[in-house]
Picture 1 (cartoon, rainbow, N blue to C red):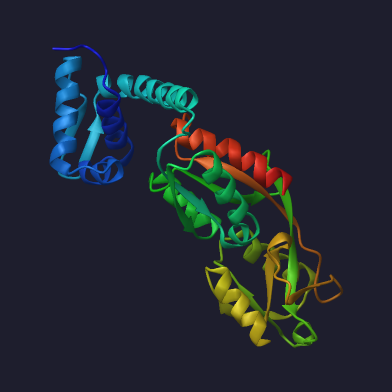
Picture 2 (picture 1 turned 90 degrees about the vertical axis):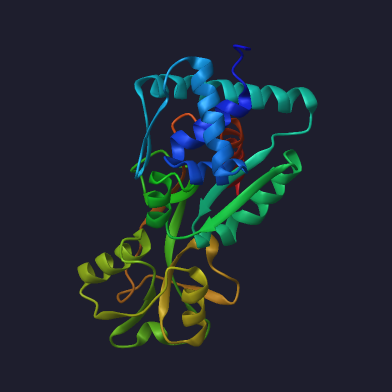
Length: 283
């Protein structure tokens, strides 16, 4: 039997190790669960050691599996990068990318267009959700990487984005008593910043509308029923930024950064991270 580490076997093993179930791993690599199980067993035979503990709730790595995982990720990254460079065809595969709605509106068309031009065979699955929800999905390895917001200055960021009050043009929504707000999830930075600054200023308000998606928030603002908080780059042309005053305290900025599910991501993910740095930092 050949003692070579077949990249297909390693790719299957890494998928199993990251998803912790054969079913999800099989879906990621485009195989049946039975085929994925067979590939792992073939790799175990080749290594001569068990790599997985199989249980009712999924799989965990053995000591030998943990040791192999780091080597497998390194080998696959080098393999994919070398193949892309030598063939000139770009990287292939599928990556799962998370992005908040406001950054999707501001940056996503340029991100996807540029990456597709370099790597036309790659597939990018995009998930739009607030940053805390994306962080949760990264921890569960349901995403490979995501753009997320963090408190300004908390971590090195690609860029700073001011948070701004947004209302309908020629509307007096900001003068209502109490102030009516349309905000995202309570644990998001925009929601927390709005409430904390209004509380500190002693301004009466109520969260009249809530939506995890920007489309819902914008619909409320366009109806004239409330004002919202957005990142400055995401404010559409038909709405206006409301200048801070005695009733609308100045809002902080947030940092925009990239998080990956793994500290040593695969070649395709690492290349997408580099592309994000180029696009988002210069947009």
